[in-house]
Length: 90
Image (cartoon, rainbow, N blue to C red; front, top):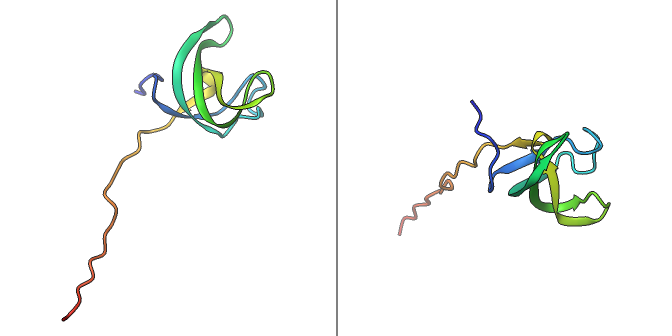
């Protein structure tokens, strides 16, 4: 079972007000605060990312998205970098 979206999650934008062809589709965002509930689209989140197009057509680093327009990404697994050890004969 998938956990619901919450503040701090990383998501991919999969739709928008223009459907699956919106200008933000495919962009990666970090979920911020809940902005409220929309009568048609449900929960609305303020998200942050690079080059987002707002509802007013401006380019910025934050925009509002309905929860259904976001696909939660799995948390990044941080693994230590592979390290090559070079042994030198002296």
